[in-house]
Amino acid sequence: MAVGHLDEAARRTGGTVIEFRLAGNATPNFHQGVIAYHDHHVAVVALRDPRCWRSPTPG
Image 1 (cartoon, rainbow, N blue to C red):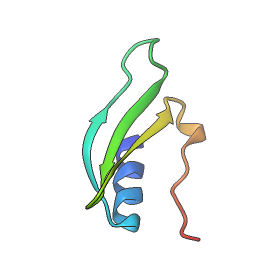
Image 2 (cartoon, rainbow, N blue to C red):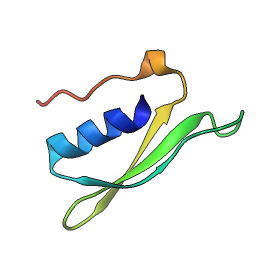
Image 3 (tube, rainbow, N blue to C red):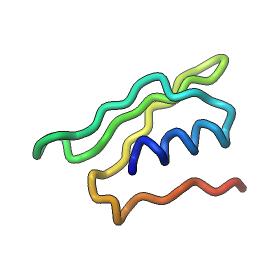
Image 4 (cartoon, rainbow, N blue to C red):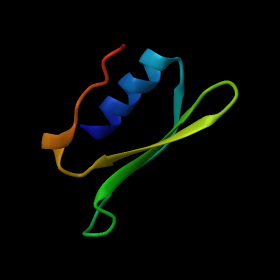
């Protein structure tokens, strides 16, 4: 599920998930999250279609 993938990406890159919004209806068609690092934030989006989700791999 999308939030698990976001947590994994944050953990592997030294960040922390500070926000997550699940897409509920037709619009938007993607989930949104924010990963915080010590000096910046990164916005992340994932399509609602779980067939498109992939766990991040280092390197």
